[in-house]
Length: 253
Image 1 (tube, rainbow, N blue to C red):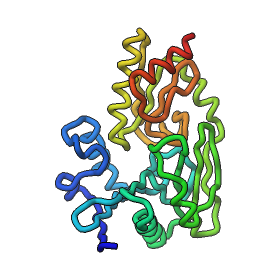
Image 2 (tube, rainbow, N blue to C red):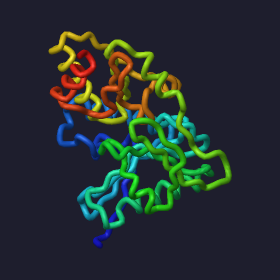
Image 3 (tube, one colour):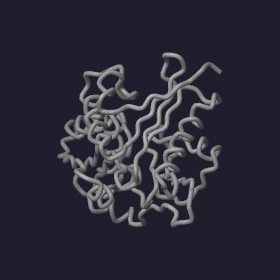
Image 4 (cartoon, one colour):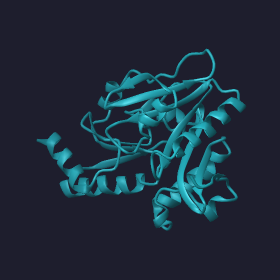
C-alpha cells in the first residue's frame, strides 16, 4: 500500500483544506455551516482527522468528548465518534483512523470510545469496522440504532436514554430538529420544507443550542436531524421531496 499520512484540521487550516463532505459545493449553506460548526467545536477538543494517500484524501474521522457530542448517549469520560468514512474498504484505512482515536483516548485518560451505528442508513458509520476492531455492542434503540463501545477502564458502559416513544409523541406539529454537525442537514431541511409547502402543512424548525437541549429533545440517538409529524418519526436522514410527501400523506390518510 502506498504511504498514507494524517492531517488534523484546526481553526488555522480549515479554510484551506476544509471538511470532506459536500466539499464540491464549498459555497453552499450546508458546507459553510459545517465549517463554522467545526470552528466552534475545535475549542471544545473536537478532532477532525483526514487520511491521505499521496495527495488524495482516502478517509476521515470526527470525534469529541461525550459531554460535547452530537449523539444522544450517556457515556461519561468517553470519546464519541461522530463520523468515520473511507474511500475503499479492505485497505486498513478505517482501522488506522480508529487507532488514532484510540491513541487519543488513552492519552487523555478516557474510559473508552463509543459510536452510534444504524444499518438502515449511510448517515452513520458501518458497524462492521467496529466489530473488526473489537468494539462491543452495549445498547440498542428503536429504528435500528446500535451503540458500540471500546472500554479502556472498568467503569459504567455507555447507554442510550429509554424514553424514545415519549420524545416522539410530544411533537404533533411537523417539526424539524437539527444541528449543523452534518453539512447535508441544510439540504435535508429544504426538502422537508418544500414538501410541507406543497401539501399545505405548517412546519417549524428547532435548532439545538446546546447539548442539554439535544439530550432532552432529540427523538433518536443520531441527534443532528429528525423530522416528526403527529407523534410519528418521518426521518432522521435526508429524503427526497417526493419521499417526504409520501410519508406525510401516509400519516394524513
